[in-house]
Length: 108
Image (cartoon, rainbow, N blue to C red; front, side, top):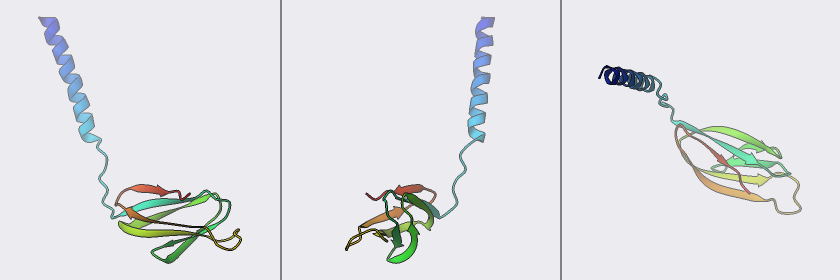
């Protein structure tokens, strides 16, 4: 009987420690209205990135760019900047950015 009580006290104590630890170490809530997107260029040529038909940046060959944007829906467009014969390769995608999240776009 004493052994059962002793084991019960140990188990209750152990569970109390675990519960108090998990209650104190919660992930902080995000209070931002921004999210970020990484746009990759896994091509041999540089590409110009436009967002909502406004030029943003040039992404060099085999490089990427990380952008911090306010949450919302955006139209992304990559247009080959050089290395084409007559018509540049173009990639377009409408992407939703959520607050406090990170996403990636790897156009192929």
